[in-house]
Image (cartoon, rainbow, N blue to C red):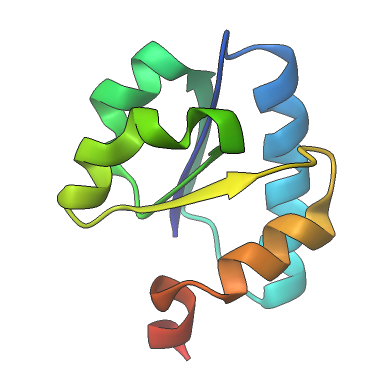
Length: 99
């Protein structure tokens, strides 16, 4: 699974969210082949190179073009919560179709 974590500046919040996503994917038994955290501007331009993008809910609309191209984009309220990331990801078609 190729995972992109994107937030405003691509430093603190996205790094914390990346650690939470790694834990969530491990708990779900999803193998990560590539994971990257970055700013929204970089994320918008590179989102199509990933299977799933995790971003804070207030940035969801920034990834509308990626969604149109088939990328799964998941909005997260609590970036520190591996539980929330796992729950939200397990609701996606991407996860359901992997089972």
